[in-house]
Image (cartoon, rainbow, N blue to C red; front, top):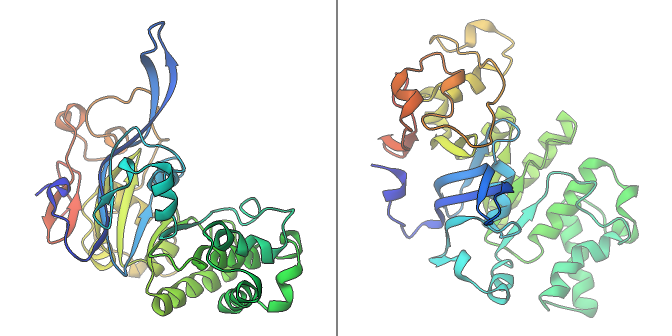
Length: 333
């Protein structure tokens, strides 16, 4: 079964069908695009209520672009984004503003994602004021409560973002994201700019908040350890496409795509005897030119198992085991 054929079930919060985002680079005199970058190309996936879906892949594979298109911060080229049974791409700007109460985002850079001219109190209060949630003393107590929820002190509310460390700034961003009690939070590489010890603290905070507030996450990252730690299921992305998606346990114990195994093998292991007994795959060469991508498997030029079929025929994302999808003509065994 192809993933695009998977039926929307009651416990699915979000389903993406055929999502594309192409950035035009040049056009002819008639306005027709002649060169484009296919940042996101025919992506199909789903997110269950209460889970964390990890999205992992190399830098430039389209992870963040996909996250921005879900919120329509970037308008997609085509496709469907079905949230609680409604296609977000059919909503008016006013309707979409209401939906954004239920879908929030934690951004990658805790330095640039906070307005340096605003005090922390106003940074967190901004979404509450925008949606008319509360004001006055009630608003004040909500802000103080949110600060304490993410591990900060209410006395820090009058400070400016530059007075905080990177980890503290990311906690402020998380407080802003949960202020409206959303159902889904898109975490766009929220720990990549932080020290390793601080990364663990932020990840543990996200896990704690998920349990307490019954949140659903899409966690975007390029580091396998962080994505593995927080995720229930993981989707592996390469050059704008999902090449493998499965539960965390299946993805690491029964890897099917060569690219996925290459990413796993790239993670240093202190004890070499703990490595998988299967042949190690080292991903060589750089990502191919993403302008006017050729037909066939996009991983072909870097794959040690590629054949002529891979060069000319694009593989579909097929269910090879229950809820284990892979886009490869020759899945690993």
